[in-house]
Length: 462
Picture 1 (cartoon, rainbow, N blue to C red):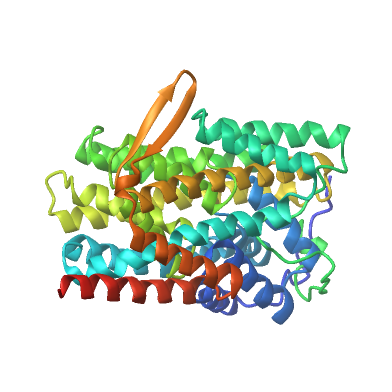
Picture 2: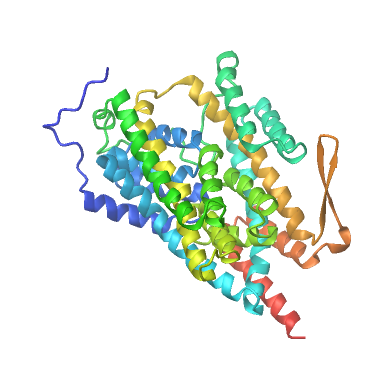
């Protein structure tokens, strides 16, 4: 039993207003996907303000990487909870999402209304080529940190083969990797030594925390009463508004499809934003038909260039799906409502995972089995993202790609006559910028967008 915090002593020395202002600042600076977002949080919270120690920051990050959904936002909720309890976690997690929500909403409206115009087509032509290379760069970056042992390379390869060639359901791949790491850490602990996979800070960079101590971090004593209270409240907050939407528009409407799909995604998609998007992209395009592969790449480009979680692209997916099937509303109103539904279904579960699990995780620091599961899942994520990048490459560079089923094997056969040479050239330019000159995602996106736009506009001007 953990000793409760002495309520007579101050629990923290950070005012709620200062905390909210800091989370708003972090959200505004959170570009570049999970790696960039976690780096921003580390710099501000660990190094500058010294609210949390390096070791505790990594411990929280490792737990968030084991969860389904966007780990950067979950990390914000976790640290907000450590500082100010439940209301601190709600404010931190909400502010972390808000800038991205507003940005993607505005850009989705522009895209939906003006996508047929030459200028919009020109902008997105160059954007898609850069996004393809950025996803490949994520494979390299995460792989360098995650695949520290040959057996982990094998695990990543098996994940890719299972997804790309055998169409194994994504949740089964992640579950299998987690179980492999959990039990494998008992047999070969040297293989499954833990570590963050998204470019997070290194454990040797120890910075002493000035605010969060072991006593404040464990001020909440886990209990069954608390567990069921948080669970019932969280489930009601999660599903109550979605059931209301379903009852108003019908349980066969696009709004209910979006609510159920993204609620399922919030439970089964492990391994970070890129892994989540691998699942979302293929389901949204191939199963539901809400948008085309090219439009999915456009959405990823928008998410890469806006603040907040990269997974915010799901809002764009929902917007387009409802815009084209408005269920009696105007297309614009349907798109906005779908944006809210998708965002709610995606992020509300993140608060539930943190508020339920954080008190237990604070008591399980250094657990070898959990660390092994994390390491194996992170290795499998490399294969998951590679699957995403190959699928994107086929659909970006070729206008026609046939899908063949040969027994249990699923194969893709591109029509080489439909190869887009300009897209290939832009992708190669983006690759040189990222891999050779280390230009970074945002400058690379800007450069290829300008080049692609110039090419399309000049072509149209002939």
